[in-house]
Amino acid sequence: MATINTINNEINIKIVYYGPGLSGKTTNLRYIYQNVPQNLVSEMISLDTPEERTLFFDFLPMELGFVHGFKIRLLLYTVPGQTYYESSRKLVLRNCDGIIFVVDSQIEQFEANIESLASMKDNLLAQGVNITQIPWIIQYNKRDLKNILDIPILERKINHFGVESFEAVAKTGKGVFQTIKNISKLVIRKLE
Amino acid sequence: MEGIHVINAKRSEIQGVLGSLVEKTNSTCTVLITEDGQIVTWSGNCNFINLTALGALVAGMFSATKEVARLLGEKEFSILFQQGQKLNIQISLIAMQMMLIVVFEGIQKTALIRLQTQNHSKAIINLFEIYQPPIKGTGKIKPQDQTQKQQLPVKKVTAAQVNHPVQTEEISDNKIKKTDLEKEATTANTAKSPLPQKEWISESDETISLKERTSQKSFSLTPKNVESEITNESFKNFAASLLDDIFGDNE
Image (spheres, rainbow over the protein chains, first blue to last red):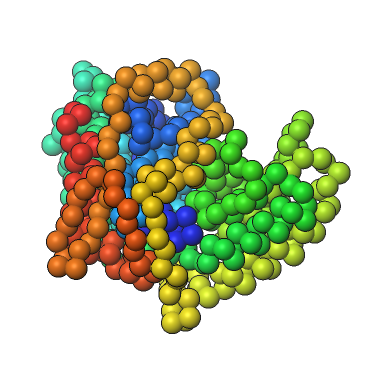
């Protein structure tokens, strides 16, 4: 749910990057951090291991502008992808307004994508939220690699709910802004 | 889940409670956050702390501790304490919905901090007690008695206040964690020109006024009208235009 804080005059919208380990969630966030105007972001918090695997979460707060003196902020989070960090994923998903599910397009990662999507559905359900109730979109990442599945196959096997999907190469930034922009618009459109 | 959660209390009252806690414990600062890490408000000297990051990290820390409690057969641990060389931090869970952080020097004050935190927590609960827990399925919090609490005083905000909120400066000037990559990113960012921030003002004729925030403005503000404003189409179109400004031409 979007949060209006009348004490600090803020409207916060929480977006979560979800997906299997090493699918590129943190890379998305880093690209955003490095490429949006500097006055909109203060700092990116990244809690990762020496192998660059997200330990707890990454966090990037971002200011969009003001409405009636209220600061509108996007709070961007990633979840740790490894299966044994289920508790962290549950925490990060709490009270989120929208989700970007980052798919690793590589053939050998197909099963990991399926498992991660199932875990996302389960973790949402644990909070009383059906996956059809919350705005979410899919980003097919790593489209620059050779051993990847074709988009029609990924759409058929993963996008059962017919949500919006985008191709991306997060390390170069391709599709990164398009993805965050579209989920943000989707969330805002659904505010009620 | 796409509902709206309104955090509302009179700023002066809640800050009065936090200020009293700072004074009675001679602590450095106190910060009140929601269970998912959003900053509600604070008191004392927080200039050296990135509060946004602190909130997110403390929420994560508390959640991890909750899992530890669960492993031990406890429902939760209601207090967390971290001891540093100079500064210490105590985090207390309040009414299962908020967390009160106290940053203080001097380990010998731990008992005093704990006692005073308990006392002041009750006052905080009282200030927020008009709100019910989120309604399952919508995530919405509804005031029980809107007639009593929704009319906040009319605020006059100068351009200087709007353009340079104290909180924003405090946060951006202090960084608690910086990886090498982020240092590089900061360097890279310095080359980019800042984006002028825009403000949306709903006019009486329902048209959108999109303008640079340069002039002095005053406005009437209540939780109710903000909620209704951000759910109307004009606001949504304005927010979409902000997103286009930021992300539109950078592919």
